[in-house]
Image (cartoon, rainbow, N blue to C red; front, side, top):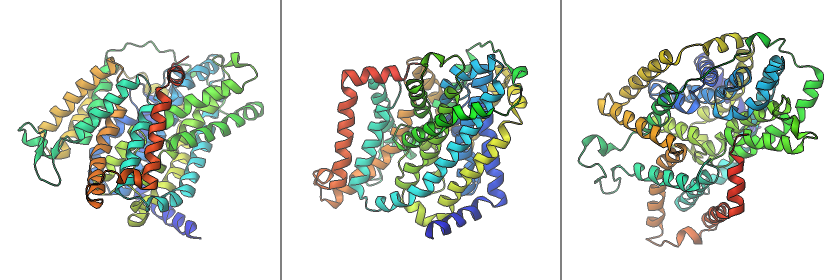
Length: 500
């Protein structure tokens, strides 16, 4: 009965005219950035963070969430019709989706992607509504020591599930933690690592780092690339899958939803890891694995379901524990802190309209996306013909204006440009920006809880291992480190991230 009351509050909040408009805008922008290669939810949300200053908290978060799961939908359109993943999680969709388009089955591929995405999104939303309240109750038992240990586990999980070199991922997280220490010490009031620059006494702005590393650097990367695109717009055909198509795709959709739902909750998981894992499972279970990569519909249904389920359930650790599991959830934490909302279990009690309104808006958003994607495919594909030399300067201008409006300080623009250049260099060195962003977000929170735990224990460092829940979380973190450090696991991990 209590859950029904909460859902009623969620529907009342999400169905308000203002929130429906912002949910629609989020889904529209998300689909757009998913369709356009070179953009994506991370740089887009980073660019739009300043806009949330002027919005109510519920409307701002609903719009940002719509951008996230909307990009998962839009990414499949480009992957199928152009063989370019508009969003990272759509990489594996290219393998079979594009081959289906070449064989004149683009319509069926697009329809199955939309059906699988809608089903997975609905299941993911139900899982959030079902599991978030019990998890929040458990989270109320957390003290400073437990929160510190949980954040350690989150950072370790981000390293384990990050693609590329483990050493580079660890270095990026440590660098993020160091950047998070810049500013004024809360207890002593002494400026740290400001180097005499007054603007740094308040710390390095989260939005400036995110927009530079993910926005500006992506612009530079895409401007230097020249791509020849073959669009199969004239071979879409009808958008209604046949009964054999549905029968073949249904098990893959269910498995993909289950895989995405599970991996989305894990730190470092989310849409990208879920889509890769789903494709691997479908290929392993297939009677004829050689058919994958040649237009197998299960190669579209599974990953597309998995990435949408993963994007939905990645909100669970954020809303219940206040821990961002991936870069986009870290940006969502930034959006919440902009409105002085402390992420964690108290959100459910102190801001129930935000918590349940956001959950219900996800279901409404998934319904909007089905309506948006299939009828407007022709328009989305035509946007691919916009020349990069026109598109990206406009994005750069919008980014600069957005960054300036944070504090109305030109220093923020220079800071963003610096991190954009650094992010570009990191991309050339195959260093991911997501671990750095997680370290930047979690660093100040870790420091605060570390200090609180020591104050409560009167300086006894054993408090982190004598409290059962804290000790359990630290043990899990250590086990993960030992597992991923083994040569066998490391080799399999590297193979997982290699694109076929």
